[in-house]
Image (cartoon, rainbow, N blue to C red; front, side):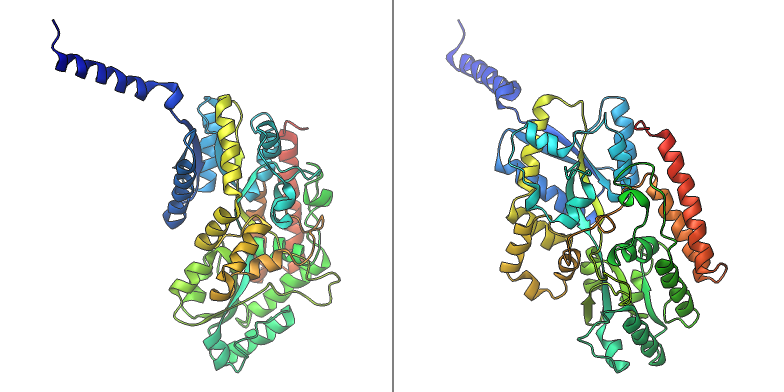
Length: 442
């Protein structure tokens, strides 16, 4: 006869095993592949943990997959083997590539409708959501980390040059004059910018309400044609090249290579991503001032609004049905004002909803942290137009490299601004036609 103690242990073990394997008690795992490392990766982990703690049915499992390119490439290969995640983070210039993959993506507006989760596009900042919506205004992916370029300046160098340290230059002529005075006062470099194409062609065009291409910057179809070799962009690039000769403007390379030159006090003015504000503040040994992008006052309609960089969350198809309910709930969680406000304040990225912006303001964050509201104010100056909602062009990662290459030709004096922009348009249009021929939409 079985001893009572042994019988109790056997029954308890069986019960424990039941609770471990019982589907009724197990949360549904939802894989989220992302490209956030370091402190940003920790904030992503925190978002997932907070959502997981808020309910017991679903568990978001974030996984860092490397750079944006590495992350989306991994997702594409995984899709082919049916091992793809439910959510993948994709940078903004790959939006057209994702949009063309209609059989692989589950548009966010359809997801939220199908899962009956509250979702109002009007609650989101139009300058953010417009980039990721179709021509009918339907949101295709979920805005996650968005930034826009702003102006930073060194207040100490401004004082040394006899400039008002509380007044950033508002126009390009004012910036040119400030840079000239900075150089005369001994600064090695008047001003520089990061991300050459993003700032000096893409955002320059949007801020002056100028088209980058036909077909609403590509939103209207794959047959778009680049047209940014217009007189206004050419004049701007020619002016930068002229300033380059005297170091009033000094080209610093692609990507974020210009940022250290501002942080170490070499350049008095820097135009770069709003999301680098925390790094600049932490690494600069001088008081930093902030301003909006400069504009040419003789161009009608300027300033308009700037456009964003960053990434969104795309939902991939062919996952188990129960996962999509959890994805919809996760997106609803990310949209909460308190969640968005914390993400915005902890990372420097823009809030995606008006409510999060207003909550951040009410909490006094902008008063305590001067300059942090400029990016939102700049993006919401005016309602976005076809020229200022963003860029939806195929192979734009490659096209941006082409533009950077031609800008370098102009800044080094090897080509005129007109020849450089004409070449960028010609080379870029070849890439667009290749993308168009390869697209399943054709």
